[in-house]
Image (cartoon, rainbow, N blue to C red; front, side):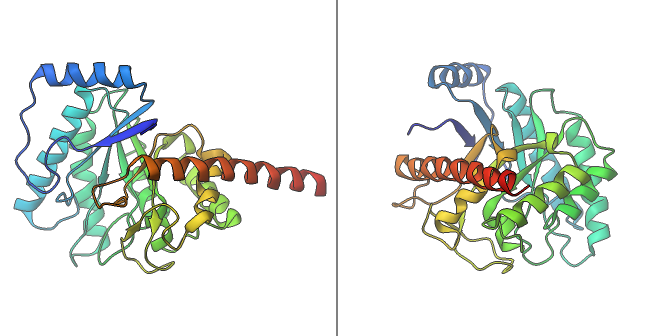
Amino acid sequence: MDADSVQIFTQSPRMWRPTNHPQENFDRFKEARAEAGLGGVLCHALYLINLASPKDDFYEKSVAALANTVDVGCAIDAEGVVFHIGSHLGAGVEEGFDRAVAAMRVVLDRCSDTTWLLMENSAGTGDTVGRSIEELATLFERLDGHPRLGVCLDSCHLYASGYDVTDPAVLDALLDEVDREIGLDRLRALHVNDSAVALGSNRDRHANMEAGLLGKKLSVFLGNPRLQGLPAVLEVSGADGHGPNADEVAKAKKLHRAGVRNAKARARRARAKS
């Protein structure tokens, strides 16, 4: 596929029961990673997890499931465990913050210097927490800027929650906010997805590369100078519905090259005007 990074689930993403991995599985994975020359490995937590849930039984299962994913991530030396914070389900955003912070504090103690916990921004559907940089920054602050807490930015979710990542000025302002409120050194990974839904729609609907509303302008996100060198993974269906394939990776790399060229051209024009 000519991929440089990969994201995996450590168990079925839609079942609570964890997979009991033997040590030899971890060893084989690390060997295969080295042979493939992968520069970045991310683990994605279960879709079921809701750290902001007011329902105690669901909350406790969520904390346990995320802890298990972190344990596996540490065992394979993944760069990060990406997770959705969840929804307060009408209990109120402050209640959601309190629940999520307590859960994350438990899980962060299991992280390693290599394997961080990465908050993913949400599309803003319903009562979800983490729909804005401000909300992610609130969690970061309440966890005292834990040294193993970082962020994963999703291009589709940003667009759906009202950040037009196809506009260089808007994207620069967004990254300025991340730097000011959290720190760009805490931005550890990217999810690169086109969007099937409109700007600010608060709906999470990914589209294949160049098949959605971002189209070729997704190159603006991919080419931003401050987003270079990060593990970047696709979460798209691919042509056959079975996930990203070599064609989707090739399209993303082409968009990246175009974005880098365009960003350099904009910088030259800016210097010429000054």
